[in-house]
Image 1 (cartoon, rainbow, N blue to C red):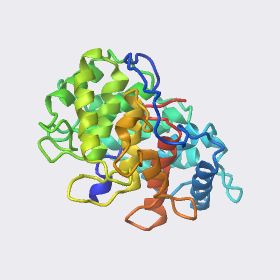
Image 2 (cartoon, helix red, strand yellow; image 1 turned 45 degrees about the vertical axis):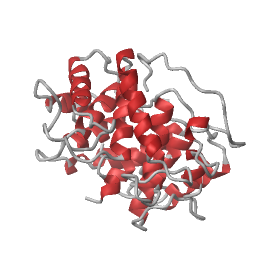
Image 3 (spheres, rainbow, N blue to C red; image 1 turned 90 degrees about the horizontal axis):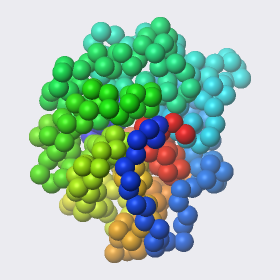
Image 4 (spheres, rainbow, N blue to C red; image 1 turned 135 degrees about the horizontal axis):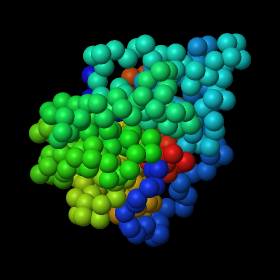
Length: 324
């Protein structure tokens, strides 16, 4: 699996940390962008250009993330319907349920649960499946899914909260503990226990912990934010791992912005200004292509649909779990 997408398979605002939001800005740019900002419109228009007659946007995985970002923009995913077939992206997700098999990973169900919730569908019965029960069914009494894997715990928390589950739910609380126990010494996380920390998975962990809202987690979140900061590139954007001049990418930058916002900060604060005067919003917008998509190292409609979906939510200041 390409390393820039390892953690992405996968606020209701039930119980949020009392984080202070910084108001000191260092850029003339506004944040979050509004849904009618030309750069957001261009990104949404790009997604429309890659939507197929069957309703899918890019592919199966990409369609789920596109659904979340469509909702983040204030639009109804059901209205993203192809005139030729009458099928929407939500129809596509429902008709694609057979792609889930007994061998499907927890993250497959978690990603779908997040999309279903944002589509306003019933997460307890979508295509004949109770996705909340499915996600909880991977819980082994300590954590969700494979013990060696962490991103299934990040997204169990995120998707269950999006579906309306309480942050005090036993599965969510146990997953929180497992996430905290498996933080790396540098303050970040990987998608696997003990593997080198990366931007994407650290951002997902921050969003999960912030959404649970336990004030005791604040020092951990601050340490994770510092992990992100140390690895920020001069252009304001982020690489996947960081260090050594690794190239910035739009997906990792989007996830970093999401984490910053979820933690109660703004990507325009002084903390996130680089020596070149750039911030994460500058960095992400600098990776937008002429056709409206966001640069992905895999120059294909499927890959760029995924990256563009991430970027839309980030620019709108809509971190996961979401529900806007």
